[in-house]
Length: 448
Ligand code: GLN
Image (cartoon, rainbow, N blue to C red; front, side):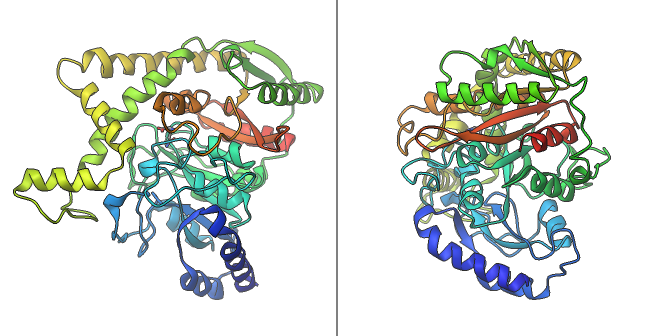
């Protein structure tokens, strides 16, 4: 029964989570109560799901792993949460993340470090590291994360899970705490491609509360998984993604995946995404610019934490934000306000917007030659805790293969493809044209 499922899961969490710290908040009584009432005839009836800490659930904290949202309780359900509840899902708790989704390792959380279930001395990836770790350690059947520049796919890859970044506009962002509004999308982290398809089917669709969500039909993704034929299917391999610096074992594993698709009848063709070398720089200008504006609302008046000793209003703002935000968030706000400031706007922000357009065009051109692209999800496997914290640029490079997808607004799926000699999961990424989640999901399903 759903109650037994939830009770077993809560026991598992009690055993494992002290070591992993995937959850930042647990919802024992409410989960059991919901399980008692669960309608198992619904598509997600009685299924426990973990939700990233930046997605609002009515009556629960939504801290974005930040001190500044300490004490905040959400007064409403985000659209995705409402949809999950309507389909019978049980929300067990909130998962840890990098503060405001800024990071690639979940080390930037004010609540503590999440560990990789495959090796607890390594990071789970980020920023949805808690969601990926929860699924990998069987502390959740599946989870929701958010992906602004790889934050679903990279942790999924590091933890041996499936992670999907939907097309921009496919899933409502209403109730997702905005980091970079033109890049953010909510998506599933699951154990199988089938589960990812099912979850996407539930959370996708136009929402009048999010004016960037699109009126595009939502296909029954989970029923289309077996529909794809690889005859006449061209899989593109972007040459810029197989550069130096990618770990040998990752390269070998992904090469094997390519050979596997070829053996099943797909045509493999090299393509070029010429502006790839500029993707990380472009992202860090645009994402920080948007973040600096989005985070202006955390001023100590409307939400959460408030500074205690202050002299006037500006001192109050300064102290609240100074005490409330962690160092990575401050770095991003400073960068963002800098690139938007008069005199620099044209040189940075405007130019980055132009490069973003070029990156988008690269993908459109590539998709004239192939129906999907295949790349590694990350250049390396999960790294050691602390290994990259001293050097933000090194950390930023962890997302070199995932970031361009967000800039172009297209969809991508990370699927596990074996493990390194150290036993760490490796993932590959399937990138599809806008609204073609059905294609990449079916491709992933064929492999898995
Ligand atoms: N790691 C990237 C960053 O720090 C992407 C984060 C994300 O997708 N939320 O901005």
